[in-house]
Image 1 (cartoon, one colour):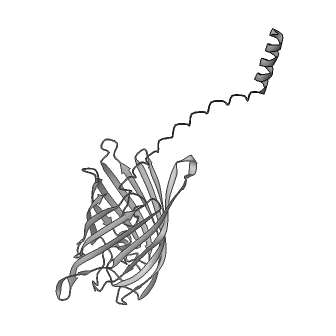
Image 2 (cartoon, helix red, strand yellow):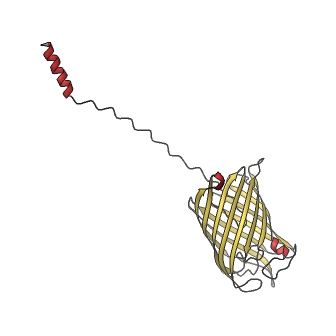
Image 3 (cartoon, rainbow, N blue to C red):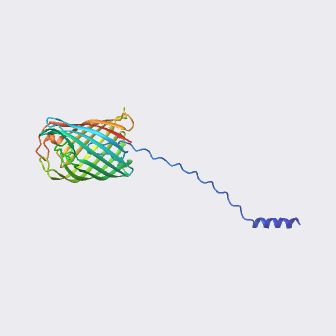
Length: 284
């Protein structure tokens, strides 16, 4: 009898469904990482513009001093930057000597649109920041027959350049940027300007953050542009960030080609002028 009961119990156990394994606890949801805030002030100079960074506004002043000077320009600028693109606008207001005395007038309105992307750097470095796009200008109605240091800045005209720029982020406090451009421009056909001219140019910039004071840096830029009133220029600036989101810069632009007489137009040769530059930038 006992043997029969044991046999029935074993048979019942064999027919019973196997217990399902306990469901594994769902993995903890990974916390979403917040991307780091980009550097609000990507290094820039006269020809080299910002690649990346954040939105912001700026005001700058530049004056040509010396025997050939007399032109003073105040420039207002604004910039919107996203991960994949940036848009910038700036408008200069010029005060200059004229036959009838001192005059003021609007310069050319500048628009710049860039597509931004990153690629692995050379020599085993980190990501390099690239930008490709168009810079264009047109005259909003002013007639300032003068110039500062860019052929397309004040003199009435219109045109556009295709631009390509690379920014190599800081290594040991040193940022490097290079920029190339090619385009076509039209201008009021009065000496020293031609009515129509092509432009091709290249510029390189170095920005060094001082190791003893991270809020202070030195900026140097060399640019070659033709057609331009001074095809070879050097720019030297000192920058200072007094508080977060504010940058002040000051320095000078040296029209080397003009000093040496290497100009496409009949301009005075010699060390008779240079351009002093001050600006304030605010990032949001």
